[in-house]
Amino acid sequence: MIALYDFIIKGGRIVTGAGNPWFRADVAVKDGRIAGVGKIPGGAKEILDATGLIVCPGFIDLHDHSDLTLLVDRKVENKVRMGVSTVVFPSCGFGAAPPQR
Image (cartoon, rainbow, N blue to C red):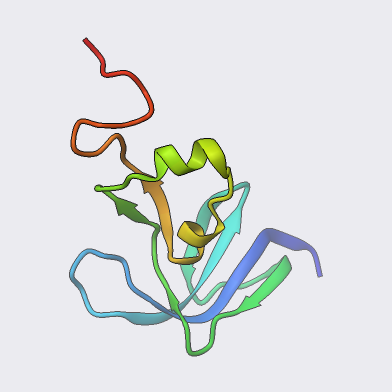
């Protein structure tokens, strides 16, 4: 079977964040982008079984102070494992970078 996608996430409960109810579907990814959502025909280099799991877009952490800790420890695995894909900082007007003037 020819791999049409880099990977397919199979059978997860999809939550889009748009306020609609979740739905069960597959998600195909090709070249770092979502290539399809639904019943995905064709093969992939890798199949991920998401049965019993939720598949959703990354979360944005709007109030974060990890810019200071990233200077010491560059690991971000914990945030990624929690689903955070975007971090906004500096928060509270204080951060590692100087303010823009």
